[in-house]
Length: 361
Image (cartoon, rainbow, N blue to C red):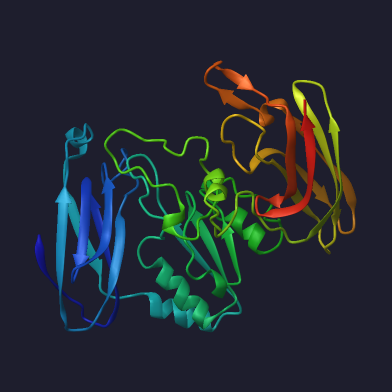
């Protein structure tokens, strides 16, 4: 379908597509929406699954709009049909948000990225005009906190211009109370990232593009191991997370244990800040002295410790022998190679506070 779109006023024009199938929307030749939905609504029709995008337009100037749509058969179509609805919002709400932010002591920008059954993400970018919203608000008020209500990692082109970022994932029925408790300081942000946030789309492992088959060409170098192998500097490393206090690490000790465990790792941890808080001490092992390639960093264990201001305690991590093993395809069994292995301890994959080596027998 091809036509023209004339905005009544200059600025950002938001576009929205509800469809069952694959769609691309172009404004003056530039793709502003691209994605796939098995259906436009959840089975109960309680939630809609739109695809969002938009473009900057000039008042009174006609822009060419092209919509490409295809919808191969899906069993869901027998119940919900095949269709496409294209909508647009000619009146941008960004100026109102900017005006409110300029008058506030602090601003909180809540952004979303939906994902679920039949609606896999195909980009790390926030959909629609949400990046533009953050950019505009933090320009008006640098004391801006961005809350990410997303299913996974997102790109943050505005990161160096906001005061803080809070990742809340999908918190369900506590979607209001839990983030509010953290933002007001009644609770600490005690979580740590179970994934890596890439700095660019190109850093990540290529996404599944359909066809029913997935080629796991990365082998064991999946997840954070992929970033280490290719020397990528991510936006946020695996295990990253801040608290409302700070911690000091010291006195790393390693003691051998009998099977099935390999060794016990102990670290002295001290709360060097002015508030109570928790730290997740993480231990990574280096390459194994094996006949096959192994990751240069691999999580071997972790321990969470809660301390008051000035308090200190020993964090202990027991590393299983399995964490020092690799799968021997010829023997069809796990093998533990003998030799020295490096150990790295810190608050994340990128936060190496202490290092040592251990002899695997």
